[in-house]
Length: 134
Image 1: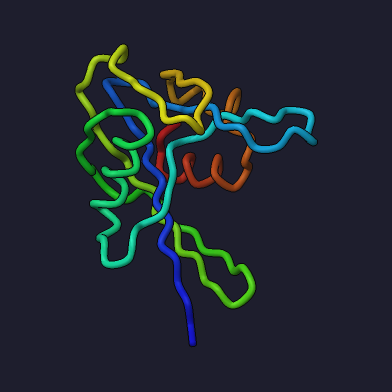
Image 2 (image 1 turned 45 degrees about the vertical axis):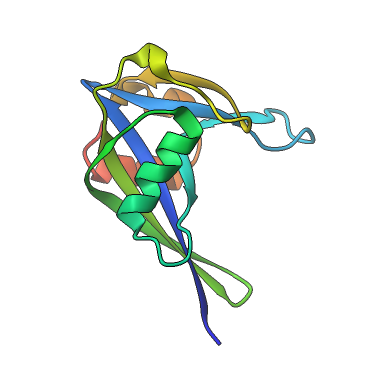
């Protein structure tokens, strides 16, 4: 039996800045905290659009509106196919209204030209460039 997971990534934009969050990964690596965009998994029966707005709200307290899908990705883990959808999400909430979930360490608003300073996943940077975010 085939198994699929739907992953969502919320690239939250307000004016000309994007929200990145710092997440803990592993004490055994040089930089255990890494900057990234908000991400999570769709629940069974949940649409990806609803999943991304829920995940962003759960992790930051922000309400967002889906603008568009920027890019997709897939990968396999054993017999499980993972499908990812990266959404551009817009918010008009005040930057000080962020309430981080327990698994996040910090949040920061940055401009697109700063992506390479914080995001170290080369494939994601290529996808962001193709989406013309920087």
